[in-house]
Amino acid sequence: MGKRAIILAGGKGTRLKPYTISLPKPLVPIGDVPILEIIIRQLKKAGFNHVTLTVNHMAEIIQAYFGDGSKWGIKIDYSLELKPLSTMGPLTLIPDLPEEFLVMNGDILTDLKFEEFYDAHISNKSNFTIASFLRRDKVEYGVLIRNENAELIQFQEKPENDYLVSMGIYMMNRNNLEYIPHDTFFGFDHLMNALIEKKHYPKIYEFNGNWLDIGRPDDYERAIEKLSKINNL
Image (cartoon, rainbow, N blue to C red; front, side):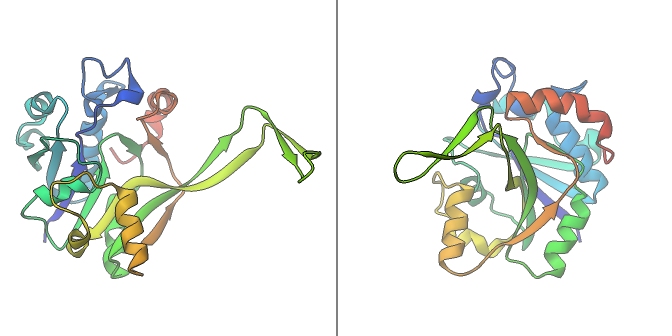
């Protein structure tokens, strides 16, 4: 049975300017290769045989570059958004989704083993699985901790905080579509809140390898430096 992936490639990449003035974000290069091509190569290696790109901003440039995917030995087709639909909304425009499929952002550099992530979701019989990463952020200021009398009771010099964050990579069952309104702006946060409300709790898959979201300029620069460490191209 083939594996299907949906890659969200419709964003404008406003946080990544000036790199995205003349290129759509998924075509911004990491080294000599666009980030989206790196992802497609990884998915092909992981056994995926069909990728759908959801496109909006500069869609014609993305379609011209990737075509039908024959260059990479994988089927590529497209779902065109006529308006921004966020992360989950575009799924309602794809009529032939299989029972289980992968969804991911088109601007992620990682050495996550997609085949293991896929298999974990299936073996756990999960409704929705979130790939997660422990991210450490440093506060660039001295932090003041006060009491109810506005008196300093603790001082922290540039503390570091850890957060378990979504990697922008998900496995999901087609049943989740019943919570997503058709052709409407609907994000990952909206779907998570809907599932939690219904007590259909998503599973969290923790990953401790390399992961960067190049939607942030500082991560984009780090991604160029780390490309050689990503070993599943």
